[in-house]
Image (cartoon, rainbow, N blue to C red; front, top):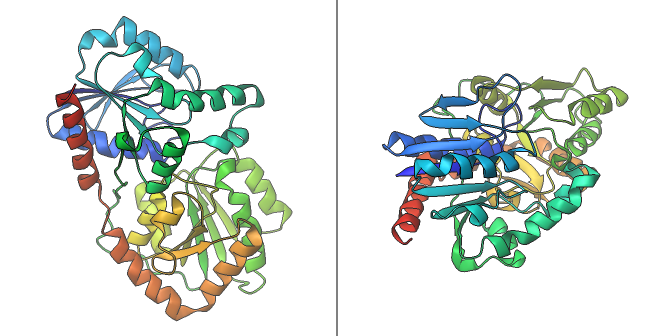
Length: 368
């Protein structure tokens, strides 16, 4: 098959996150099976307009918001002539609205609905458009097959008006090599967060909780890896609280460094207000590292409470700090959850996810 993905970013984008990783891991495996895979996405400074990564032909045009306009004009003027068999519309908040201008069979991906996150992430002038665009999804994408990554997201989509019959859950996998646990846990308690530094991720909650944790664990450390528009604000918060010697900002890290941080840390913490699933939870688990997060959509599925991690019912940093403190104090609990975490992580791999996704594409293509 000739397959065309639409997404606002590709895996090489400086602000790429879990959605881009998901697309790349799925698409590159489909390409390896002999299918012709292309991705239309936004560009960034220094990027090539045309590129090939892991067998995926990448076309980059437009920026964070203009990519949607470029997608429409590029498809109707040139990409349509390439006779793709199926189109995948990867929706990250604002849809590409491909049903309006694409006649080929289509599949839409939604990791999670954005809803209240628009108020945290979009400039004020764009927020009404974001809310309106998401409200239009059940209308514009009527009878389109959807893929999502958790039952939490599926339930949100049903509440939004998308037919349950048209939604299939395909979980994320993990892509790192965890076969050997080559990095031992640190001597003193250590926490880590790996991901984008965005407002809705609430890393400020983690820093404020860490300040309270230091009262009981004076030699504890916190590693924060990733980049995003909240980085300087978070660094200012750390300076304000005189935690510079204990909170390390690693910036963007490669896969080897990611594995090292996961394996060395006593616990991985994700204080986000919601996630599609919680890919970093499973990555941490594969390294024998339990995860702690708020009991919110997505994360409450990737974390089985008291099994591979702990869930905090109250979304506030006091409750978060108390749960982390209790976890750090009980060695037997940590060891049990660490063992369970490794077992839990083995349920998820990209080969299975990509096979399930390709099977769905073949069914959609055959039935259209």
